[in-house]
Length: 279
DNA sequence: AACCAGGCGCATA
DNA sequence: TATGCGCATGGT
Image (cartoon, rainbow, N blue to C red; front, side, top):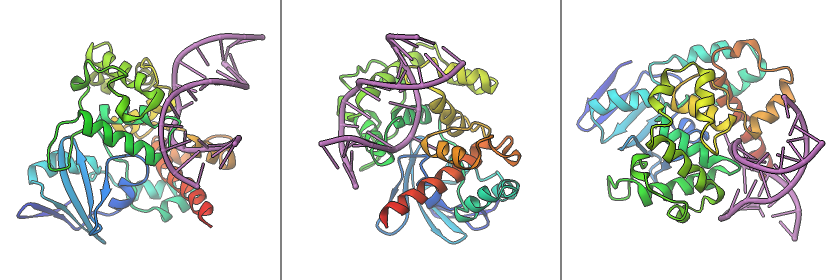
């Protein structure tokens, strides 16, 4: 992968299978905004950028080579060969369609705590409202890092918050789950660094010690937060796909990359319903 | 006005 | 182990 540094911008031109809009708006991250000019405004790990995409040319605005190397490159999983993943997954006709229709989706490699907290909030909730709650979480408790930009609050910074303190988020019954997660992380009872090194089965159980973290949220944390491609979150949409197309389980071609297959299928299935309802 | 949203905890059998 | 219900909030 090559890129050009121009003043405060990083310009990529040879990355395949990377559609920024699809990546940031396919329900895996909740903090991106589309600007008036069509660029995408993102805050990740306390750093801000705006991304402009014209076909193969992708410009990361107002960032440095150092931040690109240490943060954005990893976040968009640029070193991984998604063309190859698509090729493998295309052994199945349905997944092939999903990959073709949504070519350019990648799994965003997020921070474990942000993924964990975001998907605790996501339960029995819809994507627009999840985004609103996370906005308010960041505005209320995150560090101000720009005119209208706030970092995702660290769990350390939430150490003593109560469910009452979280009321402004309007997250309802999820407040107590956030508090429990913060307490278990702050006390060291659960250690995200250790989870990173555990076998997946053990990591699942460890995450599920947190109240409000069941199989689905644990799986999302493993996939998006810990970059484990075989983690396979099953939400209402994936559940529909499994019932409709794969009653006996995922096809063989998904082995070890179940989570990646899941992302194409989730977006494909969900959009087909959203589109249908607009007719 | 019911029903649903990237589920989970808890009670019951 | 398996099923069913309630849960905060807001949109359709």
